[in-house]
Length: 253
Image (cartoon, rainbow, N blue to C red; front, side):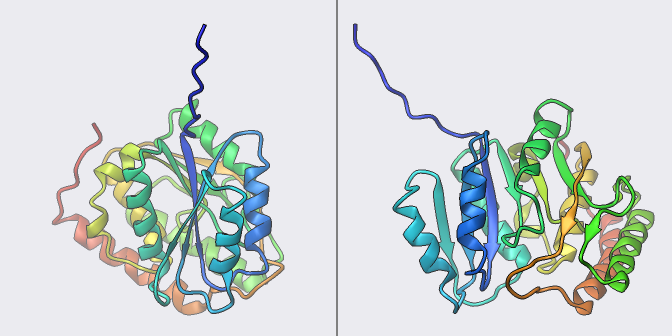
């Protein structure tokens, strides 16, 4: 009897955009790879001068079939990093494609809960929500918590989405969602990108499910968040709503 060995192809991949994350990158990679479910990882690094990409490439020798990296020149924005990653993951036929930060503000264990929301609970897009069960944010100044919370309330009112954490960056997409959205027509590059992606999926007729998480502010490295990011989100949502009156959205298959 001939025994045939077939390599297992994971159905899920986690995109982690990086810029100067040398303090966190190895730990986050090893933590994700230590989960009971298999996830591949794609790092999209925007030319980190601190050597983040070098650390990732060293780890690729240990995880050659599970860890991938795209290196880009200079800071090109969070949105373009994810769009680049989405296209790569679609090309490589992953069924579930995740967004996650490198700094442990998102608990890697929650990847499994997001996956379950899409595979067992009918979600086409699962959102790791800080606000679905009250306010679950640790180590943020009160002013920043209030700014983030009320920004999400504002977005929900303007867009009509029944999502309490509209600016969340911890997300699982079914591949079909990303294949349906015209990724080249996504206009925002900063944190308004997160709102635009959810709103576009919503307008395309996809089901969005929120999964409660606890968001913990980074311990190592430097935060990229600032007030201008929230300003972009606040004014950007008005543009999104206006554009939606004149745009025809492709519908779910």
